[in-house]
Image (cartoon, rainbow, N blue to C red; front, side, top):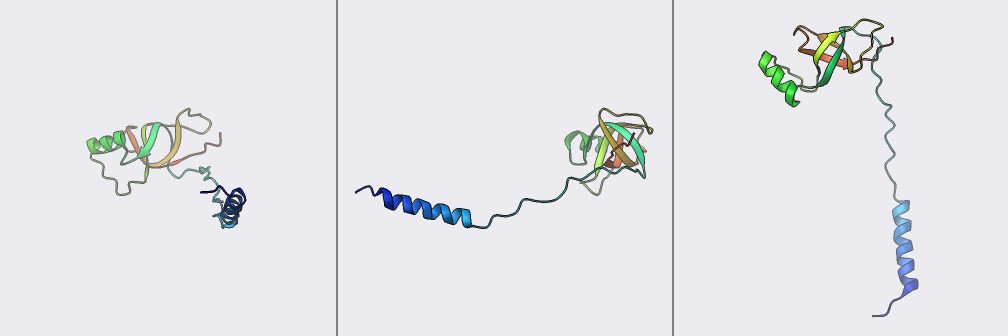
Length: 115
C-alpha cells in the first residue's frame, strides 16, 4: 500500500471544512438569577440550605414529622432571624415558615440583604 500524502491532506481538509461549517448551538443567554431584595417572610441566617431530599435535611424533616410536597423547595437548617443592617457570613435566606424554633425553616429563597 502506497502512502498518498496529497490525497490524505485533501480528505482531512474536506472533513475539517464540513465540521466547521456545521451549525453549532448558540450558548445559553440566560442571565444569572439575582436574589430578591425584598422579603415577604422572615430574613434568616442559616448554617446551611438544601432540599427535602438532601441527606441531613430529609432526616430532620422526618424526625419533626414534616411532610414537604415539593422536593425542590429550599429549606434552611439551624436558622436565626436577622434584622436589616445585620450581616450573615453563612446563608442569608427569606423563609415563609419558621415555626420550628430555628431547627429548620421552610419555603426559603436566597436573599440579597441590601444592608
